[in-house]
Length: 627
Image (cartoon, rainbow, N blue to C red; front, side, top):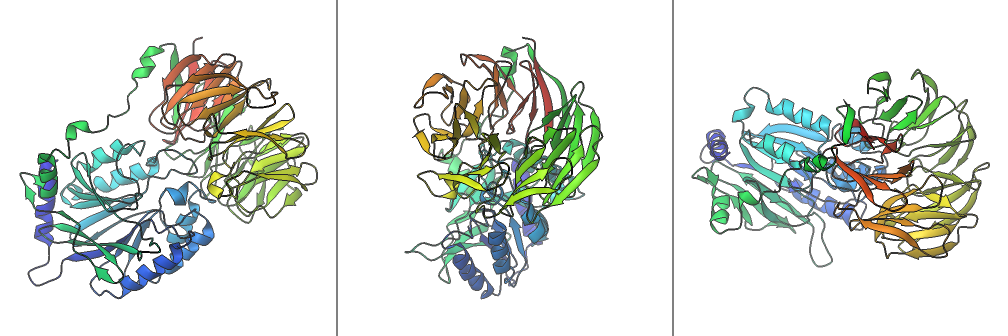
């Protein structure tokens, strides 16, 4: 790697402009957060300032374009950035993809791509985001993006091309599969890795690759908005902050190579600030050796991000992925029974009933397929992307959409039964059908209850924190003993009277977030906390009565995967690929199995000994236990 770094600077020097000509200079914006109080105005200020400078070659934007990935905010950001007089290259950040009413698809529609590659000044710039898509958890480089990167690095001449890699999160363990991309970048002369996310200027070291974090464009009451001016010549790469029309002296410099290392890293290592031996360890499968009776019966590689769960239909498992494909796999051996292709990502967990499989798509359509053949039975087009998951009861499909309308649809014909407009936030959850009501959360901070037959509003509930960020929108509500139970990012677990919407109790003493589940007999409500605890709560108690709680050995976990019980076994998949099975009555851990490093979606138990798992690496696995 040291030789690669040395070679990179030599190649840049060879390609650098001759004496008297300007070096390569560009503007670097990050974390613009359009949709926040200052986001749009501050971005306009910076764009106007960039346009006043005559010697900038292009502009980079390293993620968190918006505060939440809503179309109107993305559209506003695009309109402002379109005012630039130089090319602009954009990647999304976690705010654009996690809280996205389109599952990130609107970024593709507006910018035409969510990644980039181009050359300027003898340097190749590669931009690729890390999500996560529709989930709270670690970042994750999508399998389709890693495949794209492989193609770029395999091109003739790539091994001799100085490269700047651009992403949003730091290239470290905050991304579940950071090491996959990091090792690939070590095979080419990578000059620097540019990241955002931290809202500050910071020099970093990614196992010997020079890293730089850039400030947020946002200003404050006391300080003007700002961005970074980057300059590359044959001697150095410098980073200078620019605010209020003035470029300050460079705050960071990646200098000439000495002994095969950029000078800045060499000096920091000499001072003990950087120790390559302290690099984060790679995930391994050692835990699987403790439970030899648990194994993978089969594994299917979709090759595209899977951000939803599989559903059982007879002897098959049905799931969708980011390519727009919906497939049925045979439970016996994982072979494909049928495949149906749409044009846009599918992040909706299918519902199966009456010989039909129903799902939503980011193309705005709700579709029903023949569950046995995979052929289209009907299609209903909505006015916005559908990232929500349906529920089916008594021949009616219930599902939300990002057009702010919640619908009831005939399972047999696809005809609308009723629609309820005016949902202020987008819906991503799977609705609960209980007591003649349809109950679901939305990203407006509210929990809604609609009459299942008419669609009329029965009640709404909102917690003490009105911010959409604390909405009970990702959990799948459960009901028992005349109560609805929810958990939310404000760490509150709440019991609500089913018929009236009256809050019975709410508490943060378990520090929950978005993961909840219920036993098949309705006698236990399961929750996962953010601090390594899984617990069971009595639904018929007057307050929160904990039946059992255990230290799960999973560390801090903020995933929005739900807990699922089958035949007396509770299953849960973590944000970093660990699958747990617990005794539902006692909480005793029966076994653990590491599926991989990627986030596991809500798992699909087939029996107490068989569970299907989908993950962000685009894999479907059937895990079986001998006992």
